[in-house]
Image 1: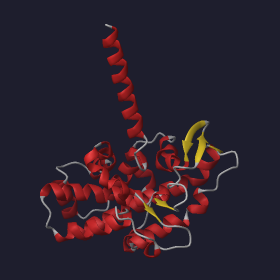
Image 2: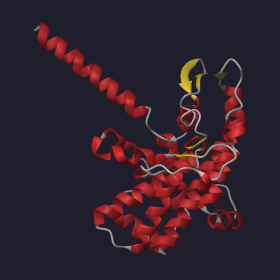
Image 3: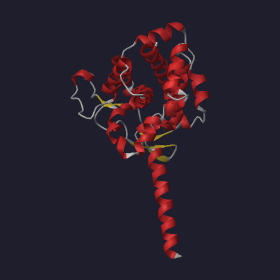
Image 4: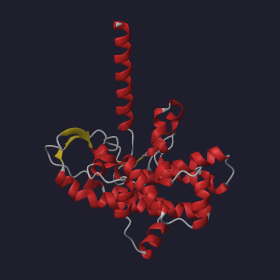
Length: 262
């Protein structure tokens, strides 16, 4: 009986650890990524919407957007973990950086776009690549995913978020969004206020524009108090930026999909 109890305790502990680990691995958080996908769905051409739906086996872009985070729990996908981010030190451009042999988010977005346009993938490969593109376009609009090379994209910046242990990356990934308690559809509808002119302008931007925008937000992102206790004030000062970045990601993602499948 005691042996059974010990096995049960170990199982529960392992299960809790796995859930905790997974919860720390979600970029933009599930709500943020799904909001990006939902925004994108508003701007797809009709035939593109149909094609994307077929590739995803009728799964919505919003739901498919978190697949690349979910597979982090499988060892066979470990090689894709470096694709979620890029390191560009202050004062440098991507072209000037030493490229990682494992790949990075800019390299992979460009590569996947070419592969999807070429149309030489199997059905499963195309589905996986499409899900990756959906996710990575969201990631590159989260400022901490364009890291400065000094603090692991803000993960090494330890702080208190409303009194609880956290880090800067996690605050931007999920905690500011989760504190609002919006569903992803509510968040998407809230950020999706735009004009035809803005949509056209955003979709004409290049990936270089995207990462440079993220770098341009660093002073704002790192404006932290000396005691490293943040909450309402920090959220108030940065919430508009979170909304803008989600909107930009969704509109630009739709532009890419229209370009690839239109």
